[in-house]
Image (tube, rainbow, N blue to C red; front, side):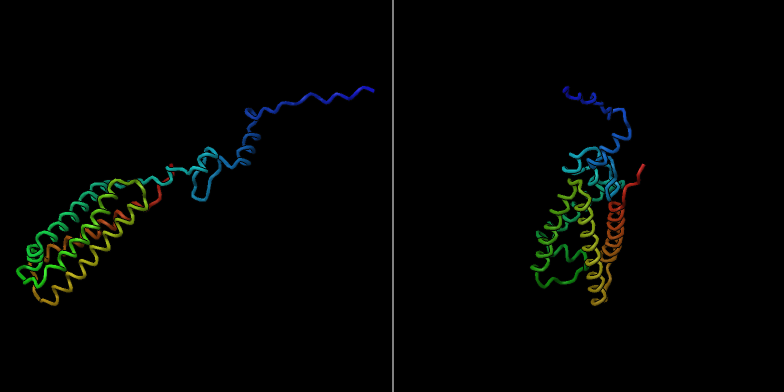
Length: 189
C-alpha cells in the first residue's frame, strides 16, 4: 500500500499579508500603545525601556534659571560662611549680631542645597529637575515667611529687606512656573 503523500506545504507570506503581520505583532506585544500612550517598536524597547519617555521637553530659559539659582545659592552660602556679619547687616540694616554660629549654619545648609542645584543643572531627568525646583520654591517660601516675621517683630523695614522680600516672591513664582512647565505632558503630534 502506498503511503499517502501529504499535500505540499503552503508558504505563508507574512511579509505581504497585512492581517498576519498585525496578528503577529499583537502576539509579540509590539506596535500597540501602553498605558502612557507610548508605542513600542520592538520587544527590546519594552524590556530595556524607552528613554524618550523620560526626556524632558524643556521650557525656554529653564537651564538659565537653574544656573542662576545654583550661582545664587552658592554665593549666599559662601557669604554666610565667610562674612556672617556683613550678610546679616545687609538684610537687617545695622542690627547687632549676637552670634555668628546660626548664620554660618545657614551658610552650610545653603551650600548643601547649592550642590543639589549644580547637579540638577546637568541632568535630563524630569523627576530630578522637578524636585529641585520644588525644593527651591519651598526654600524661598520659608525664607520669605521668616524674614517677614522677623521684620514685623523688629518693627523696622530697611530697603535691603524690602528688596529681599520682593526678590524672594519673584523667585518663588519663577520656580513654581518652571515646576509646572516641566511637569506638563508633551503634546502628541
